[in-house]
Image (tube, rainbow, N blue to C red; front, side, top):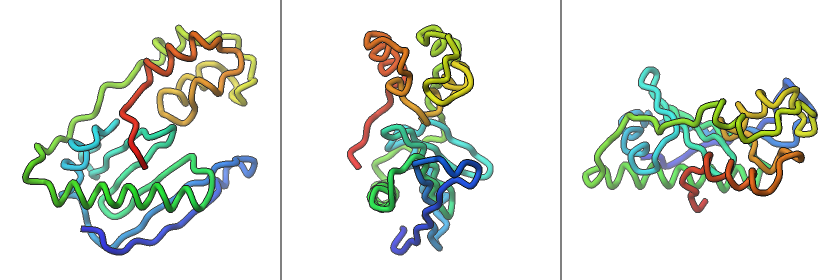
Length: 173
């Protein structure tokens, strides 16, 4: 399905202090027909019908596959971007090759609510996580942008409970 692709790695313009990079993977093929198979195969976090896309939470990263590109956030560097992009292209190709054995799905997985996450946070708004409030931090936790370990005020026991609450399938990239 995807034979050639091009990477564009960027640092977010909104905050030049970010240490992570974003990666966009561009390809010429329109893979919209493969998205329901990929979603069924990997258990997408969010599936959007129009325009079609599926988002996955993988190791604290959000990977969104559109019909002609892939967007990946929270990457350390170019090497990690290449590794994750290569893995996702392989997964897309394998899902398409095995589509006869896969029941396609356009369903999103259930999300954890912000109140569920906030119940486990200290709610001190200490800003040690670099967010203005625990509410903002909770949204970033839910969306896979940050992990429980990013809250210095959170005891280990609550970190473990949050990790379990937020856990998704962890893929080998």
